[in-house]
Amino acid sequence: MAFFTWQSKFNFDIESIDTDHKKLVSLIDDLYTAMSQGQAKAIIQGVVKELIDYTRVHFRREEFYMKSTGYSDYENHKKAHDTFIDQVHHYQQKLDQGKDNISIDVLTFLREWLSEHILNTDKKLVPHLKNYGIK
Ligand SMILES: [Fe+2]
Image (cartoon, rainbow, N blue to C red; front, side, top):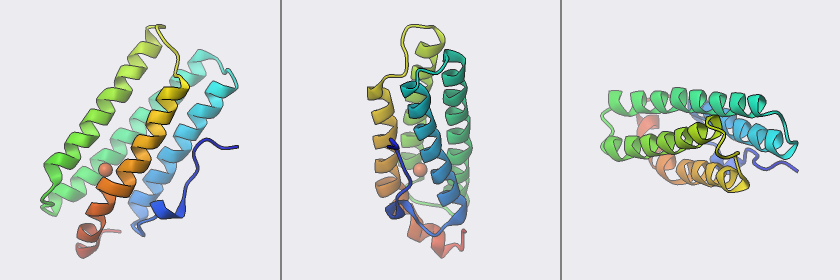
């Protein structure tokens, strides 16, 4: 059974953002699969790197949309992104230093954070982006 799957409630009908969110959901699920199959550390590090890299791409996209349309809650939304990146980066450093592996707690944190962020913080932004014709 999959650990994290795309759900229709995540859908905003904004293709660029929906595509990013689907990719992030699938990367978190890939990380779970790699961990639960006891894959080599290099593989797990590769998935973590891909997750961080894609998260940065996605956050930059949302931040560009917010900034270029003068979204009033830009600062708080960006702060949530920055805090998440810092947290994932911290897990990555621990993994690289060999101190820890990615545990189920970390995987659950990633899944819950992304779900909560999509359903609350991003969802609040959607009507604003649609007003500006962002797709
Ligand atoms: Fe966001």
